[in-house]
Length: 391
Image (cartoon, rainbow, N blue to C red; front, top):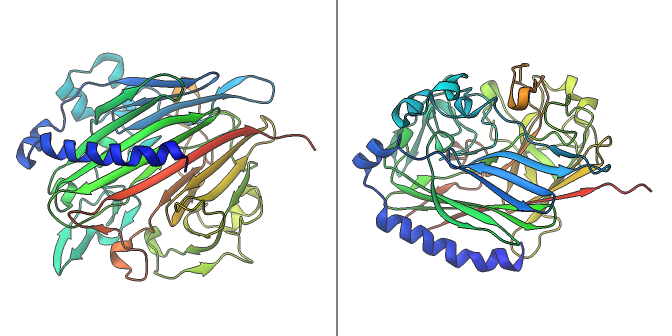
């Protein structure tokens, strides 16, 4: 993590306290949840830029040049904003017309900040101190990415926006007690910042206000380094710095085991194309990797993965401070018309979602994701882009 990122920690924690001081109570929060002003915000440094929105704290685009200087958008997205925003919310806010062309697709989460708990909670239930809680089931019998209306389906407030050499924006959201079945109010911040030439960071904080609650936030961007809508990612080169995975059983719920990747199709410790062995993986890759401790920077941040694409020459490094990363190969993309008229075929993008282990609320051997009043959840990600050099 950069020194400047470390320096911002205190400021962001103070912001969390400010959110708690002025945020609405539970009943009033439920009334206000569907109200907000839809905003779009560009962060730019030279030829490198990204656009985000306060709906779901979502990344809409990341644009950078290839080896010939041609600039492409390398993240996938919906056809228009009406496809991001829940139709009930559109009615409440008065957005209509062309914005309502598409119905929200709840299975992709393009670019969204997902939570209160990313990934799956088996059975949509868990206990804390012997008290049972039941969360909204939106994935068969399970809760996925926080429920039907998780953090990707609400308006966030703009807490701070700074332009200049290293622009950033901070969004805040108070999740009310009982939202989607989760206990206690939770104050959340996410900051998107361009840290340097062709690099940006995502910094997430969350603080329980009154009750213990599970927290596991994830950034759900889909990447195609050739450019969004330009074929599949099966020929990309992927390296994941992990020697084990948490295998899943029925309905993609972890079994509780941690198994080595050596000698399996899940071994990406050395660079490999996802297409090389994807036929051996039922449904395609969608599994949590247990990250190794290599290359930790002294503040818990380690190199997670390196992705490259030969045609464009683009290379993406991902660094983060979480114990796991979900590797997903766009198995449920189905050829719908999307951003800019592009058609996203199956495996048209890949996700690398750093996270706590999925379904940790049911596995005592996994790192805990329960946070109590006075504790602060923190999640830092750093993306570094470059061009491959010919050797």
